Length: 285
Image (cartoon, rainbow, N blue to C red; front, side, top):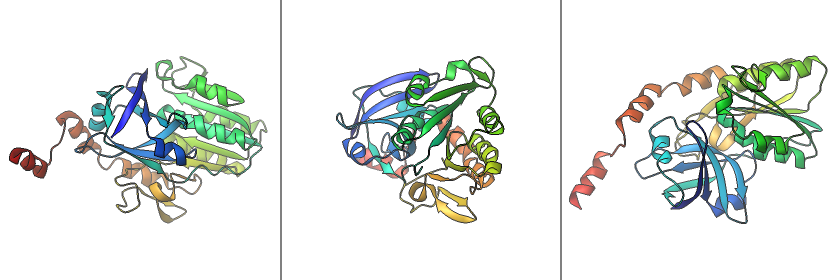
């Protein structure tokens, strides 16, 4: 069991959890993720790690409440326990030694930038961060990202705060004005990462996307998280989660993310699932 140390509401349906997981903190590198399982009847949820505290042995994750399992997690608070926290999984961010770097984050992908930007700075890079949200009320981690980056641009789709427009627009403007960058890391919705890749492609800038396909076991055995990268099948859990964004087949990834949408909606409305075997065991006991 893994104890929840703290719970904080960041925005509507977005919650930050600090969880005691000392084994994860000891081995974690920026860009890696963990998989949590709230209870034995629940699904496994892959989550980016937003922060770690090696002395306290804690990790911080940010969760958007969407389906049944995240709704179940939302009912837990400080002092409660989670059944499983597995990690760190995947490869850490490989940014090399850039002189100038950009982090582009969207929505709940923004917290991952907290550690990624820190890694960029430790590599000696000057970092521009561009983070985007639908509206002002959904802005999260602004101050944390501002504290890490050399420059921060916040965008909102509706213009209620910061730059009125998409995250790709300030990036496009900088590139057209002659700014040069060695690497761009994008974390967020798939459509956003695809758009970032198309902006940087003509300039030949090394662009990394952190992919979020459906995952089950997190070990590469189930194959649920397979993606096409450069025409080859890769597994996001063990080969990623970060890949060359210019090589990713984003259309296929979007199609795979839609596969279980109807079942996810039904599960969110139906409540906890108890398999027949578990039900029989409980009846015997």
